[in-house]
Length: 260
Ligand code: C2E
Ligand code: CA
Ligand code: CA
Image 1 (cartoon, rainbow, N blue to C red):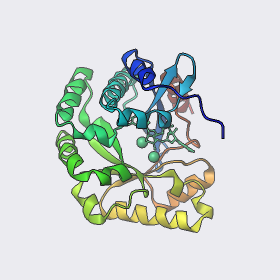
Image 2: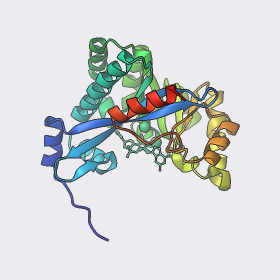
Image 3: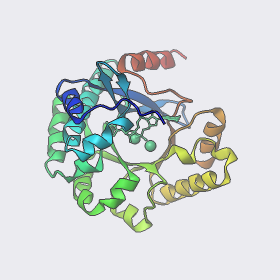
């Protein structure tokens, strides 16, 4: 197998310090109304020599080398700045930000994010933090304190990649989540895969029992859309609606939706 051209930790440190990171945005659509209700911020690295690098190539490196706190702060800053611009353009959308469990060990973080929010003029209920199920369950006791503080501040908490982490009912009830995002492994093609469909259906059932909203990730075609609508998901995210877009293209895309 050919090795991908690697980058060093120093490169990543520099990228964070020199503002080479940006956020793309992927729309989330409400199934019942067909309206765009939010966008998820997804980090991208504009590497001066290697071009656009996706997060899976560098998030783990950031987590393992103490850079994730700075990365998270940078992403939050950008996402809130863009969110303010969206507001001024008349788009009142929920903004979802991915948070690594490793960022949930710093007890000062909820206050820091609150003061950032204050500067931006936005309100906590229009911000969601997405935390991956599997890693959260490994570090639940540490993260729980910070998640509770965030929830008290009225931020939305969303459990990401649901279905990959084997959470128990008991664990799920302890965390103040308001949303499940079902992993795309159980969404795309589930109409033709009995086991994926079974996991999708039981996840939706569980979410409804716990009074949570359900977002289906990875909806790539009409068949996926029809299935998640039939099963009772609330929102959809995926290539069928739109790929993640740089901010300028997101605004164009939103304008086009308005005139449809
Ligand atoms: P995620 O949070 O599950 O985000 C969804 C990923 O699935 C995104 O990949 C998105 O581009 C991709 N995707 C969306 N719709 C479809 C679809 O219909 N089909 C397929 N095949 N893929 C789809 P991306 O942007 O490469 O991000 C990968 C992961 O990196 C994210 O997964 C998230 O866990 C992590 N990540 C992204 N941004 C950040 C960040 O700012 N901070 C942290 N800590 N993690 C981040
Ligand atoms: Ca996510
Ligand atoms: Ca996911």
